[in-house]
Image (cartoon, rainbow over all chains, first blue to last red; front, side):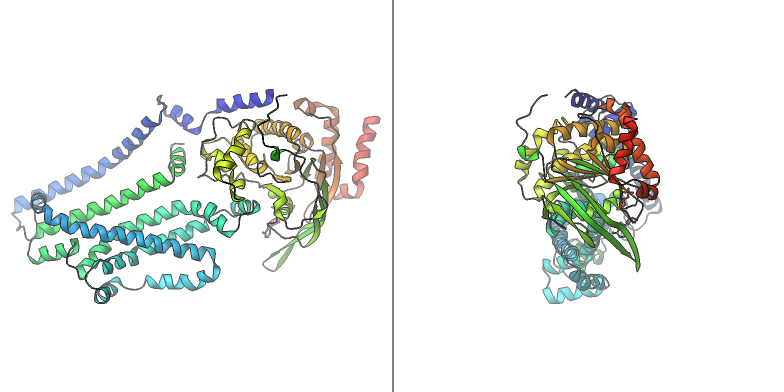
Length: 297
Length: 287
Ligand SMILES: Nc1ncnc2c1ncn2[C@@H]1O[C@H](COP(=O)(O)OP(=O)(O)OP(=O)(O)O)[C@@H](O)[C@H]1O
Ligand SMILES: [Mg+2]
C-alpha cells in the first residue's frame, strides 16, 4: 500500500504539461480564463500588422481618388463606398439574405453528401473503385457551363444556386475526410479490433475522430469557395441576391454600390471561415489544447 | 493490506490457462518468404505470470497478434482452458507496444474503451472502472486528456484499459519499453504488486531481463528469427518481490543465465534445454 501512496505522491508532484508551460512562461496566474484571454490577446496582436497594412491601403486609395478627382463611376473612394453602402443598407441586406441562405444550405447539403460518400468509400472497397473516379470526374465539369444549365433545369429559385454551392464545396471535404480516415494508425485499428470491434464500430469510434482535424482543414477550403459559388449561381440567373445586386448596380453605373456588395461578400466569407474555428474548438477541445502545448514547448 | 470490496470481481483472476503448441508464421513480402515464428510452444497456468524475452524483430509482437486473432498462424494450436481457441480473440486483453490512447478521450473514457466496444453503456462502464482509478495512481486525472499525462501515467491508463476488459488472459507487449529507468522500475514494482492482488493470467513480452525476473513465474527465451523457444527458466524467487529482491544472489544468477541465453541463443539451444537451465543454476547454488 505504501508503494501506491508513494506513486500517488510522485504523480501529484509531476503536474501537467500545462502547469509546466505556465511556469516556463513566467506567468503566475494558473486559471483557465487568463489562459484564454492570453490566447485571444496573441491572436489579436498577430492581426495588427494585417490591419495596419489594410488601413494604409484604404488611406492611399482615398487620397489618390480625392487628389486626382477620379470619376466615382470608374473608381469610388472608400468613404463614398461606405456612405452609399450605409444609405442603401436595406437593399443590400435584402440581397445578402438569400445569398447567406444559399451558402449555408449548400454547405450543409455538401457536408451530408461528403459524409455519406466518404463513409461509403471508406467502408467498402467496391464503392471506392466505382465512386472515386466519378468523384474526380465531377470536378472537371466547368461550373461556367453547368450553372446556366441548372437555371434552365430548375428555374430561378434557390435550388440551382444551392446545387452550384454543393458542386464546388463537397469535393474538398470528401477528400479531406478520406485522407483523415486513412491516417488512422494500423496499431490503433488492431487494438480496437482485438477488443471485439467490427468494421462499423472501428469506423465510428476510431476512424471518424481521427479524421476530424483533416475534415476541418477541408471545410475551410470549402467555405472559402462557398460564398463565391452562391454569387456566381445568382449572377447566372436569379431575382434576388448579392450576385444579382452587383450585376444591376454595375449596369446602373453605381460602381460604389458594387464595391459595397464586394465588402459584404468578403465579410461573409471571413465570418464563415471564423465559424469553422469555433465549431472545431467546440467539437475537438483536445486538439486545440494539445496543439497549444506543442507550440509553446 | 487494505481490501477494496468495491472493486468488481470480474477484474480478479485467476483467468484461464493458456497453451500454445507449435505455432508457426511466415510472412509473404513481395514474393519473398519471411519465416518469423518456428514452432513456438509455451504455456501458462491460470493465474500465472510468464514472460517472453527475445531479440528485436524475432516475432514477439507477431505471436501476440496471432493470439489476439489479428493475424492467422500457418500452423499450430492455441488452447485456452484446454479448449482450442486458435484465432479467437475474446479470451485475450491485448496491450500493444505503443500506449495508443485515443487523444479525444479523457483518461476515464480511454479506460472504458474496451467495455464500450463490447456494448456496455458509457455510464455503466465508468462506474465499473472508477474504483480502479486509485489503484492505478490516476486519482485526480480521470478527466484529463492524454496529452496532459506523463509517459508513465499513459502506460498506466493503457494497462487499466487492458485489464478492465475482464478477459481471461492479459497480453502485455513491452508495456514499459519507452520509459526512463526510474519510472520503469517503479511501474514494474507496481505491476508486481497489482498482479499479486489480482492474479490475472499474464503473458508479458519484454527486452528487459530484470523486468522479466521481477515479474514472472517463468521466462521463455526466444532465439533469432525464425524464432523458437531456446530456453525456459522457472523463476523461483520468493514473492512478494520488492526492490530488495533485485539485490539477492539468486536474482543475479538467474539474470546471468538469461543473459547468456540471449547473447548466444544457438549455443543455448544446444547446451541448455528446459531441465538443464535450471539444474546448472541449482548446482551453482548447492556448490
Ligand atoms: N504484417 C507483416 N508483413 C510482413 N512482415 C512483417 C509483418 N509484421 C511483422 N513482420 C516482420 O516480422 C518480423 C517480426 O516482427 P515483430 O514485430 O513480431 O518483432 P518483435 O519481436 O516484436 O520486435 P520488437 O522487439 O522490436 O518489437 C520483423 O522482421 C517484421 O519486419
Ligand atoms: Mg514488438
